[in-house]
Image (cartoon, rainbow, N blue to C red; front, top):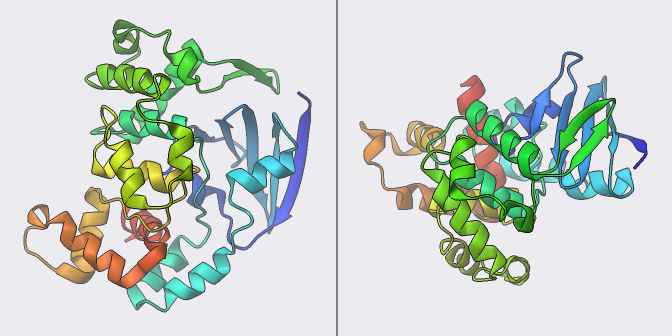
Length: 288
């Protein structure tokens, strides 16, 4: 693979907002303010200079196509922001804060394993675990004289024993990753069929069959992968906190029923709830 470059101008693209809003784990900030990441069979650097975004990397396909697919560049985020900004002033403020967020189209398989690993975990540790898995079981790509490793396919990861996964620091998640890999290889949950289903409920029901996938992890997978279910609203500590502060105002936020939060999100944000969630999450965690 040769190194390719592609540039665009897009007012709804801010690398920091995209890579630090909790949706991905293999992008890291570099000394020159660029972000470098590995996704599918690609290694890429993304840097914003003035109003130009520069993509540079080794890609399995044409870099323009890769970027359009992965960064969801054909979706009009200006239109989405304008629509959501009319919901209320809270959301409008969060959108202004995280104006450059885009939801990535991440590989479904990698997303499943990554978010199983994310359960009761922190982002620096999640990143290290995924990196160790990739180095041990993925394929090497050399970019700018450095070695990078792809996330292993189900077939590649099936070479890992539970002990192998434990040695990589997965903790209690080792059995879950092992079992889920086996289930997917045996097509107990068929990833191709998941992408053909139209109903979020039907997709969620299938994902919940996988070991280590609960409701929140299932929603993250649906929102952040190529499944692209923008109607789902993953609820974690930060989202519960911001929804309580803005709308529910309960004295003890830990006792709020998640169904109550989901109902508010569905009524207010409708089929764009997932994008609204990202603005609110990023605003609450980083700025509010």
